[in-house]
Amino acid sequence: MNHSSSKAGAQRGPDVPSYEVVLAETDWGSLRTAFGNGEDLPKLLARLLEPDPKAQVTALSELSELVRHQNSIYEATAPVTMYVAGILTHPAAMVLRPYRDVPIRATLLNWLASTADDASDEMVDRTEQWFPGFLTHDTTPAAFRDLRPMLYRAVEPFLQDSHDGVRDAAVLAALILAEHPALSRHRDHLAVHARRILDTSGDAPSRHVARRALEAWGYEVTVFERLQEDQDPQDWGPHSDGRGDLEPPF
Image 1: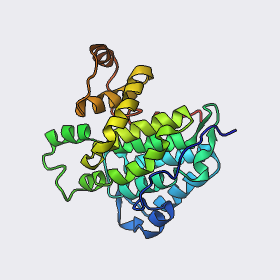
Image 2: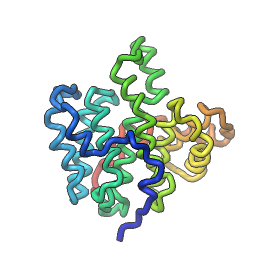
Image 3: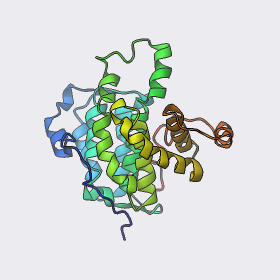
Image 4: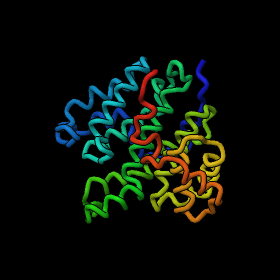
């Protein structure tokens, strides 16, 4: 039985392209990845729609190596991310992962969260210390960050999902994406979700994302929460390098 139900069509803006459009209208061979160009990406993306969850998760892991290697943003990162966002409502996203009893949709959302975190304000600030001009208006990371409102509209319907794993993954992605100024009106609502993560989650990276959002948006974080956070390992964003949800058992 599939336990995940969501308001998948709610508030989805018309500027969120379908995965078919992304696949057909992207000149994949012209885009740079971590290891060459993206000419083989369409075949890899197609594997995300297979009914076998192991094939789906393996494909996501391989995509991470190509478009997220060393937590970097490449030319191919944006269209791949839009494709992943576009299949959140696809039937293939409802396949349950054996042993975990969680839909692949949660894994896709975690991947989106980790990818968004690669271009988060915190990551950019740290990178700018070593590479001034990293985020000038015409850079690849800057162009990727401009997509955050569009990505948010794809993630938002799952903030109230009936499956805990899907809902929590959507919250983490939304908290990171909502750093974009155009999404500031959503922050009061998201702060409630962030507080829940701090109150209930035992996952240190997830707590870090929630605390970071609350503090950046001017919400109070208690002394207890700060002390607990200081005792936790500080990894990059949700699931560290984004592969924590991509490991066996599938």
